Image (tube, rainbow, N blue to C red; front, side, top):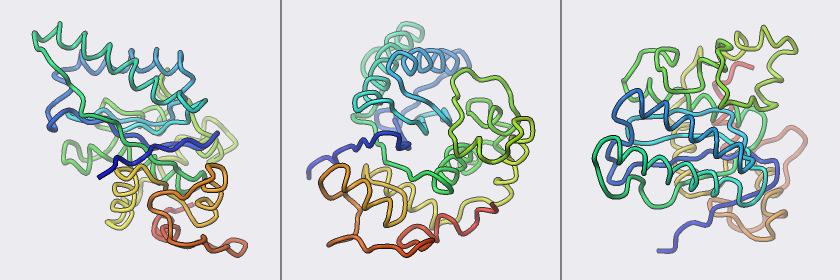
Length: 246
């Protein structure tokens, strides 16, 4: 079965997952999380990959990013991932690989789709039963986005900054989005589309990316995508927006 082809469209965010080989841990203690964040920051700056949200789980990592160019994301993942493996192996006396094959990434439509994915990323520790609220987990972007805590790794996306014109009030507006957890349908869409290296968005978004790429996109509807009426949405649109309180 051919591997899904990863996509790139300028100025379109991507949800990214990297996993430990055989679902084994990639972090063994606080120092490892700190090292990973530092190396990720350096690589993202060097390769023009803006990071809007992240969570570092025990055996995998979620990122929500906007790559600056077609190779930006791949170079960022490769650069920091290789350095991290070398440093981790040396620190813990281990050998061999750490990461599972290829990373997975899907395009994410701006607006509520993006904010839904950002909530998905930062709620991972809650869904895993590690904490009761996302603010209790120290290895994610939630503290920055929801409370304004300093985090040089995070560059807020316009969808986030548009939540409130007052930067001081923005974190509170963001916290309001977490009054509802994501539905099972929302979770299924995000997971399956990311694993398929596909897209998360409505028909208009699909038509845009297929036009830009000049080919069909995995996960898209068979045949020519339907045109949407003004304000209309199809496919995953209503599912993704259903519980968003904005």
